[in-house]
Image: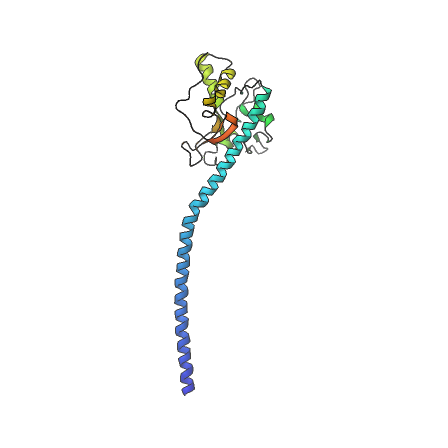
Length: 225
């Protein structure tokens, strides 16, 4: 009888221990879930910032690739920047008399220019495509995620001053020491990057430096002759 009572007592203690253990396991699980939620909340923004920083670095690398292409073009064109449209659009028919930017820089870039495949899809490779150009898809629609500011200045000069050869004046404008570091030759077509004042990367004539777009309100358009 005493032995049976002892066994019953042990069984009761085991049951209590089991119930207590299950209770602590549930609490521990809730604590772990809470900790994981906090960690996810802390790390997701950091991961997002890291991904954006990586995309921006790649975008800057793309622009520096264009800088090397511009320099090679200058070496072959009497140190004059090309006069082409400020943007690129694959829907525009190819016209040797009125070329677009990639028509003249294509020979100086190691990557094939944007083209349509057999299914009619536009194929665009870097450096033509900014990795942060995902919402507007400007690069996938037109073939280029960037705008050629020098071409825009040349177009404005031709319209404002009836100058049919604005290349020398605009190129000399970019060569001015106080402007070559402030007026970009090329920049993101849209504000895709967080962190800068204008949220855009840009390529500058001064050593073909790629950095944040930083427009100076004191910069002047090329003056009339």
